[in-house]
Image 1: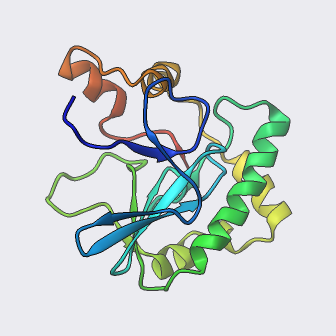
Image 2: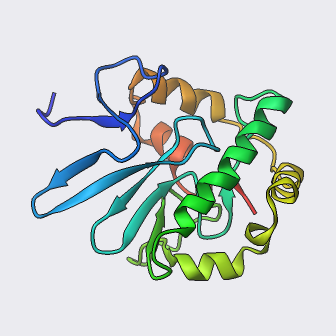
Length: 186
């Protein structure tokens, strides 16, 4: 298509060609690189990407106002297991420098579109998100108790993500992904 490589966390869900990344793999970008940091919880294949220079792209693992919900496409027992995995994944992120800039995949609230990224320092999030200081069992209970209603378009987003398809109309794409997203537990 465009002649560029598509990199994804190793998974059995994508139905199109890609280069699989495992924990610790690096993608070289000129003089800098991204390193894959496997962070299961929101999904089993969830992965964050640490950028040289002090930033981490957290996708749906850690938001500026919460953490990734572990319940979508999961049974009750699996949601509990994924919440435990999320707790351990967040502990891996805490090993990064406190000054690391966290850049989530989206936000729980509509962004201001003011030209500023949706981002925060890791130390700010650890201080602000109170339930992140809980022990694992209490964290799991707190996260599962705070799970919001599922997004009305969730199944369609999963279908498109797994197939690699794009909706024909831009309006459909915007309705599916733009603005607030219910992937965060706050």
